[in-house]
Image (cartoon, rainbow, N blue to C red; front, side):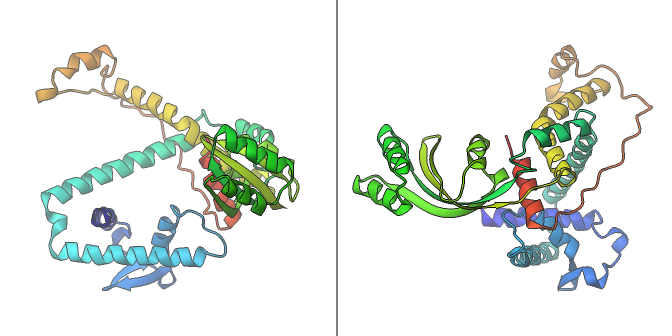
Length: 324
């Protein structure tokens, strides 16, 4: 599994090298070079690209994450060097994979641009969503919590509710479960509002330091105590790109499906050979109607997103984008 991952990573980086990640062979500015591996430059832009997929990055650990990203890129380059010496980039299978990866990347880039500029995702909705979800934005809070969780059953739920109502300490609640032979796990954690389930946010909004409650998620029951809370509001301007990403994620699938259907109707698609029998079915579904029109609408320019530099920005963007 590990070797497959390394080879796939190496393939993508090889693709990047072959398709002019450094256009025209231009050298990066010295300030942008993070390392050299056998003379091959690794830039800060490459590190930034890897960092986009990083989780739980904070102001305190960002340097550590960037170091890990650089180490990952160094390992990739070492594998690429070995692959190149064996001329693996010239073998038919690898060439086919590179071409397939290029097509996938290009198609994904177009769909991303199309969604970013979709008229079905418009500014008028952003403020409405912002105003309707104060707990995520204008009244956003960061919660420090203690949690005891156990398999839910009528017995455990009743016990947790009784202990919480009696304002027992978390240690006493744990001892109560232990005395009855009930297995549990416990821990402390910090979560901003957007990383909590939406169904408990209204309850969390009215809690004060020291308050406790019982919450059931699936087949797990939780006794949760709020140890402290920090107010951390987010303004509309700051929230807008995050809300837009949320709409793209929630509506994107349908928008893309509708657009692909339209593309099929505009294109001339011919099934050949073993797939020739699909032609009639395709035509009856309206997939092959006419050739693509010559005059195409001018595409809107791509929207560039300013890279989020603060921990608050990155956590909100990740959380809101993942809301269901």
